Image (cartoon, rainbow over all chains, first blue to last red; front, side, top):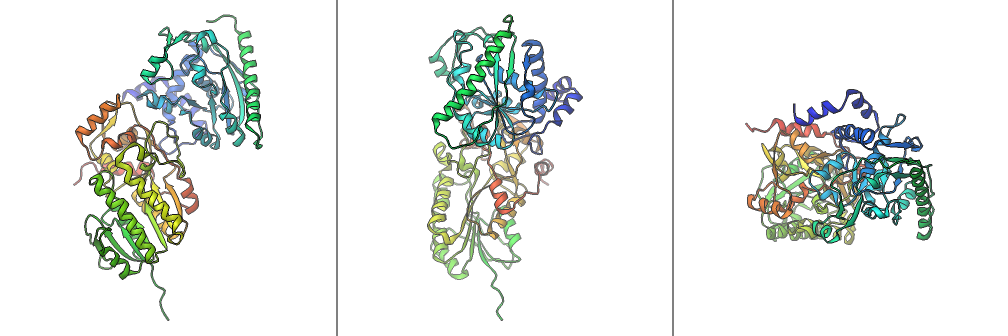
Length: 271
Length: 315
């Protein structure tokens, strides 16, 4: 027995195997989809995330049932905490919900595909290069896609800027309008405290070819995470000027801001 | 009463396995003439076969003699063959000559075989690349310039001479019995190099399916540019595993080191300029061709890989 199948047999129970097989996924005969998602790897990822989600970050999620059971969905969230832990936790929350679980896809930073091992691993777990064409084709495939419109502006921000929403790109709104995708705003509280960074060494980041080089503890702190899913928002596909698109983006941003405030009020202590 | 004239078709690249499959599918209903740049092949008494350089004047005699109705241009010299210069002459200038003659002698249907390599392998490629995506490979490596130029040329002739009815096919990796391209060589070998930590998504099409696609493209008169690929995908290293190849990892960072190692090894099946195709995915969207031409590949990936696994040791 190979190492991978040994680990898999230890981690993935037959019930989980069956549970994940039942979820609809547009995959080919060998369990892959065009973006590198792999049905077998995702089972491993799911089991590992379970521990992180339940034991380490003790995630408290509310409103996950508001995500439609089918059709194109964009999960729009605030981004924070240097590493894409927020994406992983949102993904797990939807994949593990009792009724109509879905395996969402996450749009990731353009730098990841160039990293050996990690890039492929993220793809196998369902993460996809954050390209508008990828997002469009996935929405056309009726997938649920996690998007952080702040991008690296959000994940790379410093601890002193925590819970301050950075500028949102308009790309997601254009796609939501074109593909009539339902937008679910998500407020993430707690991820800011997982890797608090006090500074960003820009020359080092440039040298290494990475988006940012944070000065932070070399550890991920076990902050308690609150995920609040908001009410579905649907926008028509009318031909409107960019100004009005920005206005719509602001509506989503305001909804996320409210959800963050809700999470911050719910939170009694950091860890 | 005169019998209906059978279509006369010129098939180039006749020494290749794909052209022979296409010839076998068409020989009952058409009068074929086979040519190849590399060697003369015997294809039966009914099919005249020539070894000819398209750039030589005698090539025109074939057009005069046989009065072709159609041309199926499969004779593209692959990037692993010949020198860059000779490839340019054969692929670009040769194709230009072929298209000029086709126009001069009133050919009314042309099918040109290209490759998905023209899209180029970069880390920022989206998956399911459409036909209208930019062809990045010319900017990435000099060794694929001729492939891109061949396509550009075919595209120019496509709009300049609408009567030629040109259809350009950009297939994914063509594999299967008899295929001698670099990816087929890798899958059939006992050991194959991989770049450590990279296993891009790939698409494969069986040579029989590809031959069907070419014949279908020829028979339906729809000009344009089409990707040809099945709706099925597999990671490179997984494909090697299913073909029974043991993987030999090559350090992948820094990229200059991997390029140096590959240049030193000088493997025909894993040349340094194709390195990024084993690093980043180039996944094409074949749905337009499938829809327009009603094409469905019949051989699944498992069957393709079984062939390679069972034929590791040739008798």
